[in-house]
Image (cartoon, rainbow, N blue to C red; front, side):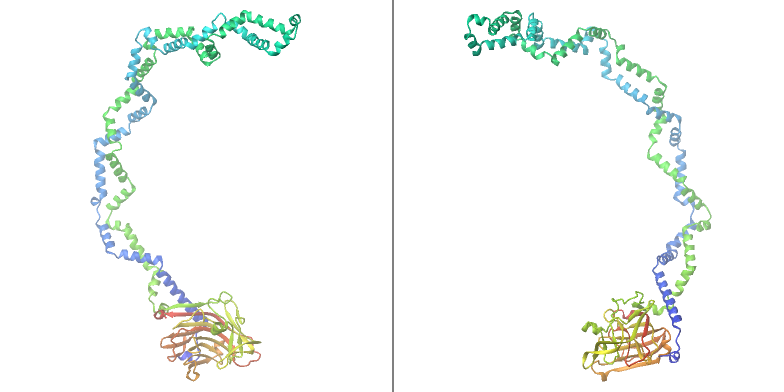
Length: 636
């Protein structure tokens, strides 16, 4: 029921009411944001921890802690025992000694490697054999030498059939005549003359001449030359070798690598160098061998200070103890516990365990966690949160959830939310229309403007032809003298029950209709959230749309002049059994009659139903529109 303030038309200033609402909403949103923040989750986790039995048990353990009851005490005790043991003391004494340093240096040296190689060699069968061979007779020394093998190779080649045949040919007494015949071309000349003399052409020439004439001819001279060559000593000796079986060996070996190799080998065998090498081999003793030099080097190294020290230290008890422990689990275990005993962690823990229980508690992480918990609990943010999270100031915010919002900050119509003609004009005609009693025509968005994030519906005086709906004649086309506009959520948003509100500034002219209203599928049910006519009307209509006499109306009006001076926030709260209207949070009307039971959509419109003069253009200004749904009716 409307109170006295509403009856008197006294409402809070819109700016103060809106600021109050916004600050309350911002604070509530901040509370919700904080309620799901990691900061609060961490706090609650911390609170659960410090209030747990485990935390209390840990606190008791800190106060009752004694060093001689800890694992660190046992580790320190074990460390001291190992540190005093003879083998470990000797191990570290050896490890840090100059003797081990010298031993390791010698072990990596080339001298020790050389000594070991020589030691292995002088004890080998190869060395013994070399020493034995150096003591045999001069003849046997030569027969076992590589030089003797070279001599054998020479003799084998010398006695070969090809070498013997070659030298038999070149050592022949006819060889000089053979070479001379070849160089002078005698054999070739004989063959050429023979072929010419025996030719038919030659014989024809001869028979064509007289005997005396023939003797004077060149042909006769050729016969004389031919017979003379046949009788010559050089040609006769040439034929003897040419027809010899040794000619083959001569031709095969002459100028060959085989012959050259043999002659080189023969020159070496016959040389003084060969004789000298043979003499050296036959007179050689063990001292002249490379084995003897190796033996001398071996003895030299064996007697050196470093090698003698190396083998002496290698056999020592210090070295044996070091080798037994080095890298062993015993040493590794000792060094692990030593490293831990000398660590900051152990020193800090021992100090912690040996100080007073109260001081130990104050230095514990549990004490730090508890202090952190108390500091957070007493902090301004957490005090604010726990004071307000269940406050009755936010009862409305906890139960009402925003379902629609429009702030008109795009500077143009958001077509995903709004249409700019009647719903049935869009659905049936794909065109705009007005009602039969309207003096204005509803244009399709042409009378919608924006100014600084505010929507303006402009009513203008202008002639236009358009469609008009009459309940008996249907849609007809007629002339209009005025234009105006509307916006509707008929296609995008409908809701059953909830809170519907808008911040609106109505124009002051009482003949200009400005309306914030809701409708469903038909003309009724119909709700005027706020309709500015001669008065600002709050009301609803219900009944059968096809039987006008059955339609019932509830309405309540307030002075338009007061409500046209500024923006006001007009609110409808629609619950299953009651409709309540408010201005700036103050209830101005309420009814339990004709409460709709179907989803409805929002319409914001302007226009006129009677002629006017000199007051146009006029505008209806809308800052924002918001809708909410109660948590109990979310399924609707």
